[in-house]
Image (cartoon, rainbow, N blue to C red; front, side, top):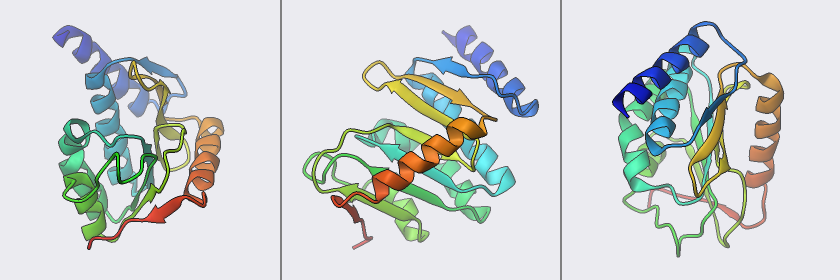
Length: 171
């Protein structure tokens, strides 16, 4: 597995450096974290906005990304988060990732009723990772695909415009 991850890390590095439009298929928790970190690094370097939709906002996953997210925010870029599960299923109070965003005036929204939707991270307008099968952590990522980026941006706008979507506050 260690070799696999290092090969995967090499693939990510190559795609980032070449600004490649190659699609990166991945299906593991560790690969997801590796891609999120690389995408957040891109946001930090280029000061790009980040948009995330998540269902469960898994603590073990997002806790590992708090420092990376802080660096993005410190660069001047903003992070927006839309959570597709209601408070009765996913309590955002005391969630370190959410606390970081709210403390730094980032926008966090949560539905009042469970909503099916795509789970993804979009950085700028062409860097992304979106899940094709949430249960199996299967996803596609890319560092240079404005066509899919535009689709994900429209999907994010649609999600945050839902009547059941409410802002989350720090209090």
